[in-house]
Image (tube, rainbow, N blue to C red; front, side):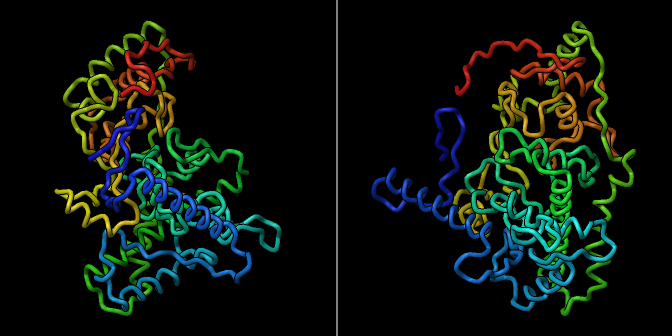
Length: 424
């Protein structure tokens, strides 16, 4: 049962914790206070490695999301952890597998406890700026993750929502840098634009490192646990079959931008031509081939017929019945969190609100979510032409209170909303 708040959002379901009786509000207050206190203590442990006791270096948490830990034999766990440490090191002392497209000096700058190295260069950037949300392991389950909607990104499966690449290619460094500099409006991800270019480059590289390590970890778990690969693991086998194919996918768009990178070319339109584009976009939005209304609703208010939506990080937690869901979620770090389609009238877009940003979301889709790609990709013709996607872009922006013209970025007069802000 979902409970509606005053502004129309849905709180998390009660799959997580059954009531223990007594005053509901008092029990909720106690739980919240305990969560906040635990978060404060955990954050302090993350950023204050010194203190009264000796410093204990952190370790990467084994990715058992969705697995019963009892199904992983101690020897299998040890083999996977040892191979990952041999190839990628630890959070304090990272390594880069040979032949990968990772810059070790940048990774080292972002890794480790907060402080400076012997040359005076700041270290621990990821722990200082990112781990409180994304976790030491990059699992998206940091100390405050449960308080956020949507949850912070789990980097370990190599899926990123807001990129400029098609065909399933990994994001460019510039895509990750753009997210760091601009943040993700409407989420817990802030802008880190005040950081120096060197610090930003180090954080981008560390995210890539965590992702390549995470995908290698998933390969090892499939190989050792699911396929029962004989132990001990052979380093050469892991490099050739696990690390290098993952690394090759990260090189794809960087090395073949003409094939995978989408560069929006915003058309120059007069006010009259813009009105015509919006009219065409409105008609396209309603077409069955677009499937826009299924999630976003007939007027773009996020109230379509598809009411149960989940991204790739949550849908594995959802069972056919509530009881099955309760059994599934105990093998995950975070509770089940449904996905809410964007209400265009809010004028808030996670991936950015420029025409180019909206065009990319339509062209590429949002990987890891039900939002499909409408543009062409290698081996795929695409649902819409480029002109049609620009028409849709201008229509979506015309619905929002931050509508932008095609030519000079001037505001399109927003149509008054029949529902005031905060209404359902």
